Image (cartoon, rainbow, N blue to C red; front, side):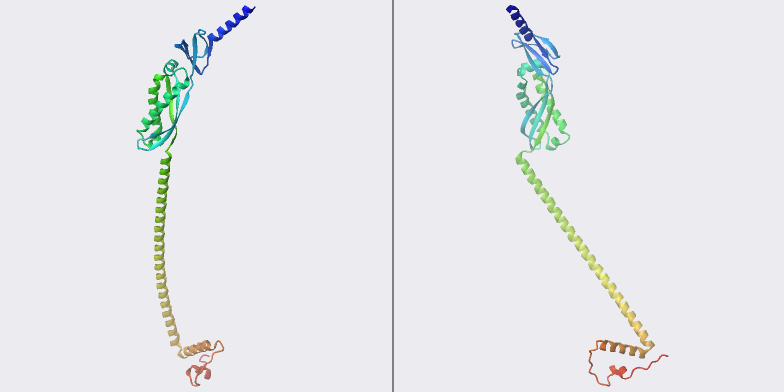
Amino acid sequence: MIALIALLVVLFVLAESSLFTVNQNQQVLVTQFGEPVRVIREPGLRGKTPFIQTVITFDKRLLSIELPGDQITLGDQRRLVVDSFTLYRITDPLLYYQSVGPLEDGIRGRLNSVVSAALRDVLADNKLLDVLSAKRDQIMATIRDRVNGQMRGFGVAIQDVRIRRADLPEENTKAILARMQSERQRVAAQARAEGAEASARIRADAERERTVLLADARATSDKLHGEGEAEATRISARAYSQDVDFYNAWRTLQAYRDTFESGTSRLVLTPDNDFLRYLQNPPAPTGP
């Protein structure tokens, strides 16, 4: 009975060590004493020689690696702090194993250095406006192709290289902000100067127009006043010529009214003064 149980245990251990499962997102390299034997890319249940062969699993999915911020000088001598990330896929497990070993993270150091060098070389041939414009996609495609060519011997395919963030260095940012501030101040000062000039010009034009209008108004007023005076003189002369005695009497009575209207006026005149003639001898009516 004990022998049977031991036999079952041995068979279970042998079965467990000789069978393995390949998932859909995996690819497998089988090695024997460290030497590659075969590559399995199709999913399913597989077998191997127990205790002799080893299964090394690699991911078939897209993998990403982030490159920390690195200061890069552009073609126009501008400097940028660039953060990037790279998407890659392990396409040849055997070549990958022979190049960097069984660990998936073994490629990171090499890939970081290749991507950093490609970024520096390609961005050094482009200006800041190119990096910030629609040309950026073309620049990143060039970087991806260059990295892909250099990493093909490691059994990986580079799917994409992207700039996640591109900032100016802190000292450059401060200088640019100061330049922008001084430029805005210059524009504001120019706008204020132009506004003051326009204001002075408008005031001068308004003052000149006011002076012209007042002069025209005074000229018109003097003309109308002269015409009125002349017309009044003609009317007075015509009325005076029609009845001289009546006109003299009317003017004298108006003088009486203006003189004695307040009731407190006092005149010191001789009795024979001509001003009092109508008070002493009222004029006789000439009408019916």
